[in-house]
Amino acid sequence: MAKILAIVVAYNPDIEQLNRNILSYISELDSLIVWDNSDISIKNSLIKDDKIIYMTQASNIGLAKPYRNALDYAYAKSYTHLLTMDQDSYWEDFALYKDYVLSQEPQAIYGPYRPLQSKRAVQIESDATLILSYNLINSGMLASVRVLKDLDAYWDKLFIDGIDEDLMCKAIIKTVPSYFVKKGTFFHSLGYPVQKKFMGKTYSFSDYSAMRLRDRYRSLFLLRRKYPQIKQIHKRLAYDWLRVYPIRIILGSEHMFSKLWAMLYGSIQGIFSKID
Image 1 (cartoon, rainbow, N blue to C red):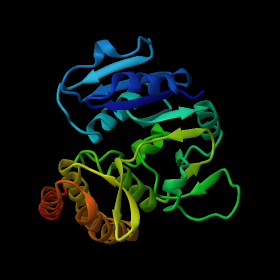
Image 2: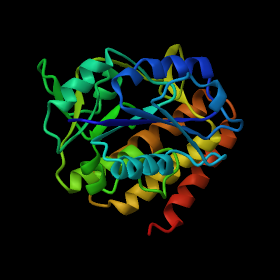
Image 3: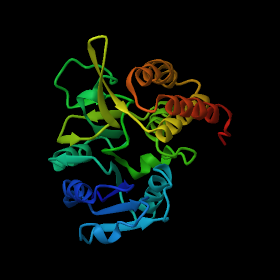
């Protein structure tokens, strides 16, 4: 019988929104770890539910380490599956997604289908419920604890960005399939969406802080060095983050110079940091 543990990592959240989001899926879980990275504890502001397990190290330690701790906890406590969620993500009909995943092959990784994300997926011109793709994101990902342990998921050299991409690379190497699932409705905010006009045309993109950009570039260069055989990492680095994103920042992002410097500094860290 399936036993599901979930983890949501919180960092200075809108507490009312976080509680609403948790309520959209907690009823279908056996337990939920709320890992608190916030500057001020949110423990006493969380909804009251016996399924919630509050954890913290009283500092912001990113995502990889809390995820890894949750995986080790799940393994030690005999949970069968682990669900990872972002604080700003929520579901409609989470039960449809959960029940479908649990009915599928356990030796795979599953994530919610989103039209925005599907642009990077393997294109299947059908109404298939499963879409093979190695572009899943952390939030909404549901997988067997055994599979995640076998893949040595959640590399602790990473902080926030690149954790899902690292897992996808490991899945590719070990030929573990990864699927988008068209069940339930999943809502997730990607960065800070902004619109800018340039030469009469409106461009939409996600804006990130300088600190987040530094982490993003650091993680991509680390992954490029760790997985030189994985072409999708090279393509994403070359297209999304060395061509598209610098142009967007130059065209319309606030604090342009600090963000361009953060991208350069993160790249240098990723190139020269130790991998092992």
